[in-house]
Length: 293
Image 1 (cartoon, rainbow, N blue to C red):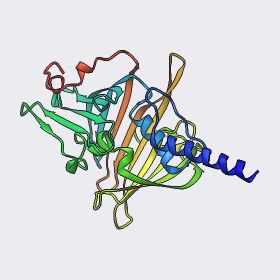
Image 2: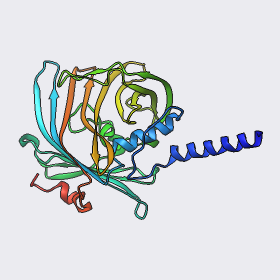
Image 3: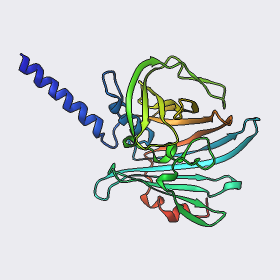
Image 4: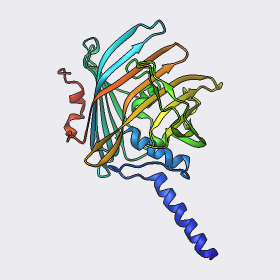
């Protein structure tokens, strides 16, 4: 009997280890009680970068609001193709463009790789200078195109970049979105996870992240500096999109607030398309520089 129990324990451990280290592309995963922090965060990143879908595109608007309440509005467009291709190590490609007149054409292109040891390649196109520049991982703490979240927040942070501790499970207290004045996720059961960057020193010492138990999406986070001061918050709203019988959790709102300056940025995605058959040829430096944007 003891041997049978031991054998079962070993099987459970091995299956947990497999889930924590490798999720299949083009599948939807959900977390559950009993999972480790690593397993939960593997799913959170799987959802963040829509690895469950063949491709995704998002059209919407970004609102930049300063402490006085003055608002600058920009149109945005983003698309991503998921490849999960071991032959050339490509995981997915991501293109983000501003299409408002004052910043028309400014954007980023990112290629992310299957090999966890290989850093993503990311480029930014500056139409005013007619130049494309490589974004160094050392500069991933820079503001993402002037927003109140970093390049790392949006494009470059990966599961392998942090260590994770499951602090507790609790019902989320709710988030009052400053853009639409609605309260989101009040009472929603969540995993609360502490995320610490492996890079040290870094611009934050830890993140405290609330992961929705229902979807596995990271819905709210607080960033803290080395002194323990909370200096930034980030909220994300997700909605379920049904695509060919699959329930895809997709981000519709992201709102970042810099508690030091009182500045915030809200992006609202309104034109969302999934599994539409995007071509990989749309994710090149040439595409990034195309003036038709």
